[in-house]
Length: 417
Image (tube, rainbow, N blue to C red; front, top):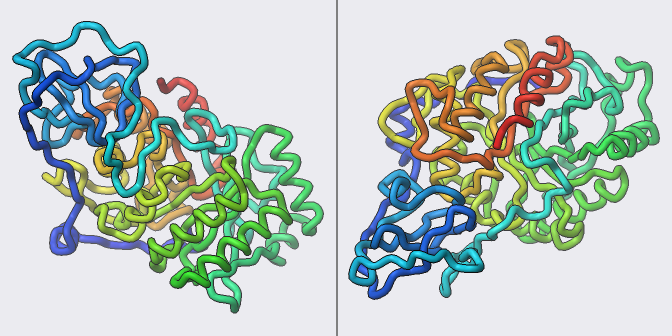
């Protein structure tokens, strides 16, 4: 997120040279016996097996209700492992759906259910609240429209201690709203809680200089964020480091914070589009390494120029439904659960340098990802009913723009599967 956005122009040539998205491939192999029959109601995670129509299949990532017979292939969730048991498939689904990971788990054990996330809705709307005055409507926290389920306070600031962060109400913002004290700010967070909302502290932004690049810095980060949570009542933290991050030490910091704060800790991430093009990028690597405690990644699908999608066949232009769906499926096809993926868009043309779309386009993209309807020329290789929702930069710009984003997207989220 930006105080004033700068456009990141990433060309297709640069993406290819840097190793564009990393994708899974299928490797078929014969099985001595058929795995338990696939069940449409069971949840499967990476490495789980199931059989259908005389073939064994292996799940590449989290899936539910996606038939192996119709969802296997290079870009799909199931890998065909070949004919099983002489072509005889068990006809009775298992009493208990197979949700246990394989005997030898991957490096980061997947979870069969979403982690505790502070009682957020199945599909929810996130907005950033600006702790500064830049021309958008200045707001006290309690004035945030009720359509927003998760409010990210932007931003925490770096301190002279490596990794540590602090928070101070901006004097300009306080003046613009007629005065705002720490006590009032804390009371407003309590008010939002009473409305069933969650409030997190965002770390970073375009001008953020927070760096977690050592074990000591990781400890400092966890301790300082936990202190802010205790002091103000924040429900979690948002990682919006736009000037680089160390995935190893940030993961260490977030796990330490989780140990301090408990299972209701909300952890979100707001990478730029280029940060989620490859699983080898630091942001994507961080997301996968903390998948078991990560709430959601709301990628900033703007200020990026054209980008490759999960099909790797073409570059898609920002500001289109194709851009949103083709880039979102990179994450769902490469290890994140659908409920950990959300779409981040600017609330107005003034909120970002490029990539604005009408809120109705956001709804169309959500329909395409969740149901396979209202797609553009690109159709994702699978449907993702659990797609988590949408985020906007920012609540202040949305209010300035007549609440068009929240009033259009929030009601639509309740219609998703």
